[in-house]
Length: 370
Image (tube, rainbow, N blue to C red; front, side):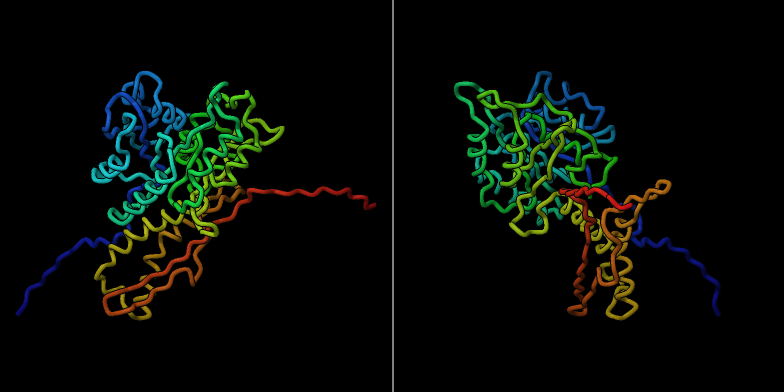
């Protein structure tokens, strides 16, 4: 004999929203208030109270971040005193579950060893916390003091050793020519009206809001020849166009090796975003028997693990205008699954960015046809 029984269970398939890391920053620099403390910041924050009442290294960059971002920017800041252990404070932030997309270091690097140490720290964070973080750090600007300062040529020679021969695909170095372009480009990267796949070079994002244009010890202004020379040795800096109003930014050059895939920040940002989201999907599939070494099992795995890529590839239509997604639509061979044993699955995924021109050459000819 038996009696009827009904039980209803709610199944968690891992298809919900995940924490959005993109566009969040952790900015570290010299201040006077809340020293060595992690303070939450957004567009409504009072930096006079949180950071310093007078001008300071950190407040200068945060104000530039706000001017060049928007009303949705958010993140964290750590005011420090000169000489504080920045790497140790980054560890403290990680241990307190602070998870930014980008760390911004306002104190200029003084040697190649500093840049390499920041790269090592980013790799350590990836290994120990599974967090994919990129770092922007300041380099010294050109000293305009008439007697003891530098010419533009001397400044170029002085900063070149900072990055010469360095391989650091998660670090970019920005010389402080204007004094606040580090915060400005950070704001541009955090701007919600553009995608993480867009280069900071994108002119339609608008001109940068910066401090007055710099000069060298001879009183000579910054020229495009100087910024091009800095860009050529892998620094990231401003640029401008003849007879075109406004100051813009060039590529944010990550210090990847020559020929590397991640020499531009936007390429790494979309891959990092895909990796973050796929990781959560993969965790939900641990010991899920639907994902198995059969045709149906691998098809299920491709569908589940490929969803973040399909979402990132979605375009947006505004009237007749179509704005592309972050990446190209995944192809049939964009995801492959291989069971190397009964308990280990290897997954290979391909992400294809969408190209955009940084050099446009136009030829114009007369049309004499009748």
